[in-house]
Image (cartoon, rainbow over all chains, first blue to last red):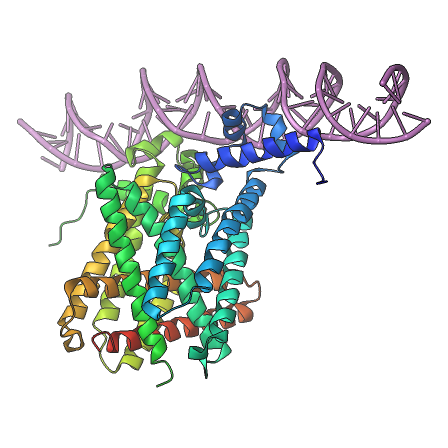
Amino acid sequence: MSHTLGIRQAQKQKTRQALLDAALGLLEHQSLSSLGLREVTRAVGVAPAAFYRHFKDTADLGVALVEEALGSLHETIRAAIVTTGGSEERIDRAVALIAAHVRAHPAHVRFIARERHGGVAPVREAIGVQLRRFADEVAAALGADPEARGWSAEDLRMLAGVYVDHMVMTASAILEAGASCGDSVAALQAEEAVIATARRQLRLVTLGRRHWLD
Amino acid sequence: MSHTLGIRQAQKQKTRQALLDAALGLLEHQSLSSLGLREVTRAVGVAPAAFYRHFKDTADLGVALVEEALGSLHETIRAAIVTTGGSEERIDRAVALIAAHVRAHPAHVRFIARERHGGVAPVREAIGVQLRRFADEVAAALGADPEARGWSAEDLRMLAGVYVDHMVMTASAILEAGASCGDSVAALQAEEAVIATARRQLRLVTLGRRHWLD
DNA sequence: TGTACATCAGTGAACGCGCGTTCACTGATGTAC
DNA sequence: TGTACATCAGTGAACGCGCGTTCACTGATGTAC
């Protein structure tokens, strides 16, 4: 039989998750550095003091949000890496995966884009660490590809950095495109334009990659 | 004879600039959305109410900071555009110009990177408008180059977007590299590594660009 | 040039408010026998 | 199974504090004659 959490632990987890969800919602229109502990507990419907049973302060909650947000992104990246086929199809699938990720987790994407260079150092650092980890993973995958024969480790890392940065920028741009249009038809068109540009940019990178060792 | 401002106007400008400078300093360790009006006036040494003689609120001050920060960046971009020579030299000079810009205006660069996706909508939009303007300008310059024969307007805009985004990312990365090392020798080394990577990335783009119409 | 009045950048006191943090508490859940 | 005690997630009241905003004001600067 599976190990079920005690009722107490399960309830605690539920409250913790409610705090994280409420915070993520509130962060749609503000930065973490201005998010108040009382705002979050008010949104959940618990007493302010209850916050301290789960987090030291809002920066601590922010770090937890980083784990959550980049955990989901990690899966998307892995899925994009294992894609096979010609470069054109791989580009299309990678961009489609990003677009789907943005639609599935818009608040997570916004949070990462906003706090990546935000005013809360521990959160900024947590994001930096994870993105560097993603880049290492992408670099390893690129190195395994026969196309990368003759590439130095440094060049592979550079290329991986381009891909990871491009992914974050594209995700954020898709989000922004969708948000800046009141009309939902216009929003979809704007998103499509961003997606088309992202594909074009990846094609440019692919061409550069192909001629890197010329 | 030159038109000198009245004493009153000159004093007002001086106070206004002091508010902007103080705010920029305070924003090194926080986001605009958590910057308090009283913090700023306290740093300058004027009464809180004096703030309202210059700005409606801190978001309004933030928009003024965008003008200031991107005004200086605009000059750097123009300088990078008019660079001549082989692609390798142009890349070296463009990256050197960015590095010099970061050293000359670190707080401006930090502000733009932080607020580009930050929690204050008017500021985010002001930055977006200006960066799009820069991209238009770069696209126009690229279009004038004989290398761009046969490129569609859309492709030129895409390439310009790559350059502008890369510039902002690189500036922010140089800053971060310099800040994350306590040791100043290590900081310089870290900055150099970022600069070397940025050059490599631009070389990749140049190669892609050269084979775009193949 | 001198005088009388207008302007307005900056003052300082006051306001109501929500903040983060602390504390002793309650009562449901967990545990030992 | 039942009982007695321990744990601890969440409560609610209290605290001191700094916030944004308002207002009548002051006094240097500007202007008209």
